[in-house]
Length: 262
Image (cartoon, rainbow, N blue to C red; front, side, top):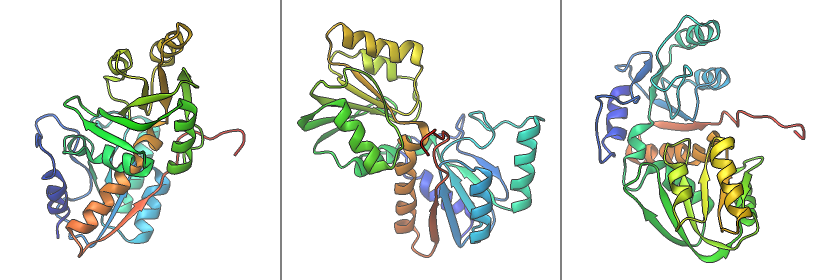
């Protein structure tokens, strides 16, 4: 099977198939390459590229940018050039799978994350990009939920802004770094909002102020990797079922942060 044919199967899962302005394009290599082994990852870090090449994959599917900007536009910056040379030498074909998994029903990234969270309650998929709400059967505090996510997802530290000890049942999930996090936090019906990245001086301070003014508001920040990784692991499993003739493997790049206690 050609690499582009594999990607076509994944893109076909989307309710909104639009390539007019998407970042979901070929980033390196040849889309016509015959493919038997497919690697899936969050980021094409140098370590991931080397590991994928050693494994013998022809195709690497990533969720996030390879060259530090959303559309992966090239520049002459030194580090970018070194990385591009490494990828070209590897011979890998790299495709991005970012917009289309968020336009599936249910959202593939959210489905993978929620499966790992394993929370008891009803799930509400919305028309807002990357927004999924969970209505918990039993109340949880933000601290309890953060600890559960750390354990289930292997995240080193989940940061908490706001009412950390309030018992909540309304959880809003906006994984990665979507633009509507602040709007959802301001929603009177929301209690806990989960995201990957957030601006501390605006969104974080809003959550803190709301809590100090007596409102049941909290923001959980998982880090970008931890907030979408299980969605890409889920993508790898979907691909295995869709194309059983392929050898599919997920490659972990790890969180971008390191800590003094590790």
